[in-house]
Image (cartoon, rainbow, N blue to C red):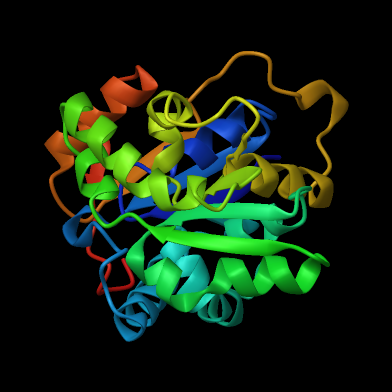
Length: 264
């Protein structure tokens, strides 16, 4: 019996959560939803994100999910309560999951403008850990660049240097990639950081928390990554998204076009 899992994001960022999940287990059936029509979420208002969250709940309502993995930090920061209240299933989120694994005193957070404005990362981490100071940096252009079919590495190098500079001045010891898109450019970011700074990908913390809740049957640990039990749904540009799936995941999959404004 497979666990039915929902993973959603504004675009390809949720691939980081998806990969973390299927690297650890194969007893899952995944419904991956990408709201390409409105990517990026990170420049939208608090109220807009909450309105979108209700539409996401409506779409998932007939999928009989066992759990939802919230792969979008912005929705996590603005509308986690809406997802939990409407879906009435376990919702595993990035921010609360990663707040439990920080170990140092000075923490940097890279995230979208809306996530930073919410200060959710700062509030959760500083309330969970004593004597911790969180420094936040918004990265308004990252998601749009990462979502391009062909990455402009020169632009990403420039933006990385720009966004990391204020955090490095604070002598941070750990840095949280507070948008699920950012681990996709892990190497670019790593090259701009001092070797002693620990880079934290929240998707791993989320999936570890999920696996503690839903124990992995011993004979169902994942050895080979397989996307055979993953279905992809988008709200626009299915052909373009198919190319991104091929580029980032190395697979050819049917991409289904859906309308979030209805319950289909």
